[in-house]
Image (cartoon, rainbow, N blue to C red; front, side):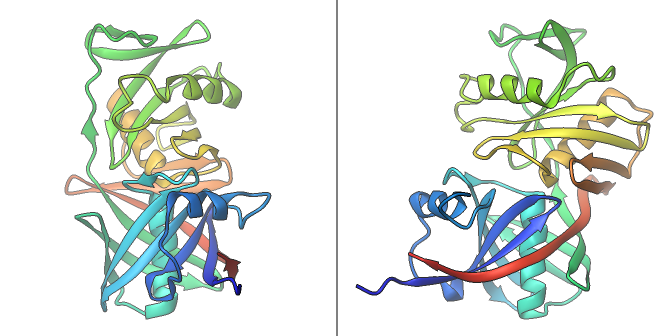
Length: 285
């Protein structure tokens, strides 16, 4: 029996890597099993997720985002930039075009390709607070209506919000905690009853650098520890400003492999950064 061959493209955004598949080239339905198989780093292509793109009109494109465990994501800043890179190369849209994720529309603005690096400003929408009950059984406490989370005996100020995905941002001003501390804590709370409906929560450990720059470590639901995240960068920028009013946009967010720029305009959050095309190939289904 001859196996079907699926055309794919592999991209990375600061180490956050995705497989891109165009609906027009789709040979088989994208299932959870297939996503996990393709994202497997030892026996598949290897990636943090899969992006399924579809052209609707010259300047409107649908995007569906899958995590490496086969679940779907509501939003991904790096995934959206990567999708925009592929679409700009393949369809040559206008300098401003639209991505539709589920029923929401997001703008891609001021995109440009320099050699193999793609740079654009992506509209990320608004943040919605997630309410944690005062009697929460997680290692949380409230002080003057502010949330604090206990990790290794230290209570850190925290912000919980939804940017299409749920985010828990932990601000470690004294930089006492490490990447491994984040991973251990994030794994523990993924399926707590407070985040069960959303199938987990993205968790960030935030180390402020100055009033214009912050450094982050990221654990993503559905993917685990990751080198970079666009939506997490937006979430921590908003969290940092909420906890410290002296922090002003634009904010530079240092992920492990590079920086992303987060700005705000008319209540909307915008993410700016680079991504690049690594290779394309065929995957046997």
